[in-house]
Length: 535
Image 1: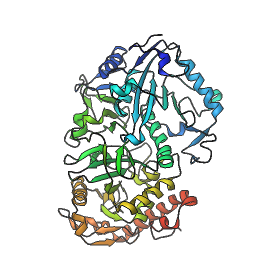
Image 2: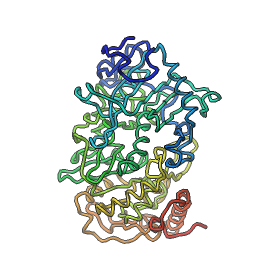
Image 3: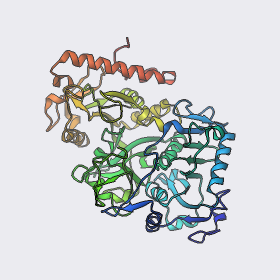
């Protein structure tokens, strides 16, 4: 048995991997980049970043994600289309077949941990088939010091084997790819897919189970930053709503861009890096992300300007989900360690393509819980094949695919924290005004930035608010540097009757969606919804 750093594989405490051809253990970034290039699995771009393709899958496959159903999870996991049950016996079959598949192969092992707060540190050992997957792990998780590595003991094991293709008849999977989480054995098993986001979101799912239940910590799919006065702001939002863009503020320090925990005293980053979308990335629009794409960064599924090594971020021939994975300290104004105070302001970002919701509104705790469970945004024509007109999208807690517990568990924790901290919650529409997509126009990004700045500066504490007639949310009547007319969406529509009809239709969509969670929803949360009834 050979390991690159001469550590005997037996000491790595990974059962059944003792017959691997070679183990590359905790290689440096330079070594991982060189191994990738030597294997012709990637190339260096003009900025020094390593560009690789993830193969057949360029995104997560939520229909192929499973959780082992056993005595621990049977009565705690929110079973259904998000959390599909997998038997412990079937897991053992798949696990053993993956390990058998890895025999006599070269593998890469990395030690890491999640949660910047030492009170919740989760140690992880990751086994991958390729060096660039291992680089992703180095960049996205927190990196132990040399002293910590000398006495490292892992709690969770991740095995990622893209070249293993499951046989559904034998392995009881839907198709050849899968992600299976076993909370009892503390193993995440990934096969048939090289998309590295499965690794990242596997651990996030684990912490969405552990932190709320065992630690009384609210785990959140959000970005977070902190101002000069120590005021923390967090930003929830689905893809395309501006979560990463709006939290990247040159006058505020970044805590993290995607996954956080909120305990009694602080907001802390779960990760040690960022996994930023790169579609249409420019230095002018997002300078912090653009400048972070350098040597040590992993780029996934990007295309190049012909006959150059310069990335063409507008080219989405492979996928619209092009990504850059880099350590958080590649962002110049990142906080180290990635911990902030309790939030003072919370932003729910939505891209309302129907032009109904105001560009800025304030929510009561009950409304915040309702909109948190709803997790609303809208997709517009051209974002996905087959979409020809705006379509509503609801994702509970702005991260439904990663919730092993019922959404109401997270919403109740949010509500409790809002009452305890008096944090203010704002709904920000980064979508359309003056009409729906195709008729109205997109709300100017400079206006959105100005409104968020006004909130963070305390300017919105001094203005008058009026209630939206359907959603009941409080709309400001003024905001410095913002045309007053756009603050009330109805006033921007030429056809006011059409606006009323569109608002009622969207409200009914909210109510219909909320029925999915009515079995565990309290009456006080229902008071935060629209004031109309479905037909």
